[in-house]
Image 1 (spheres, rainbow, N blue to C red):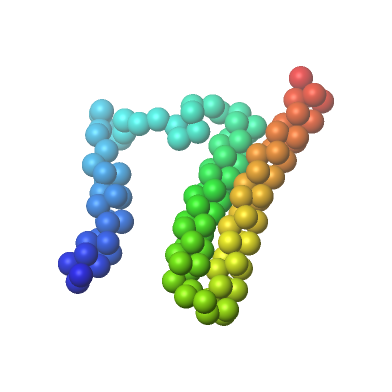
Image 2: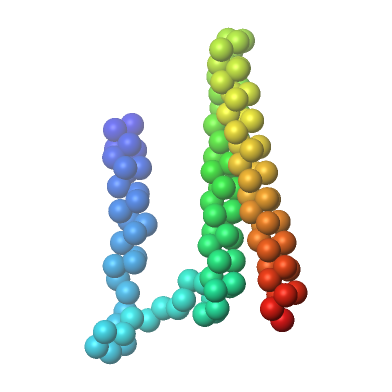
Length: 118
């Protein structure tokens, strides 16, 4: 069990180590691309950030759903634990709604801007 905990604690180090192994083409040039798809205008940059935030909310909500399910399963009839599980489930649903609003609000603003500009 102790080895498993140590392995889980060092997992972030293993996941970020690949970023340090970037290949260099020439002096000062790194291979890789623009994380936002190579777009250079402000609208696509904001869309990339909005998408990242929305997907982060969805990922956190999924983790909260799993945690709430775990709390429900381990409550064993204890009302306090069931109330905590319901509260966690509520916050997970709020996270999903925020993610959907992020996509919707960005699409709305993008429609307004492209209608007036272009």
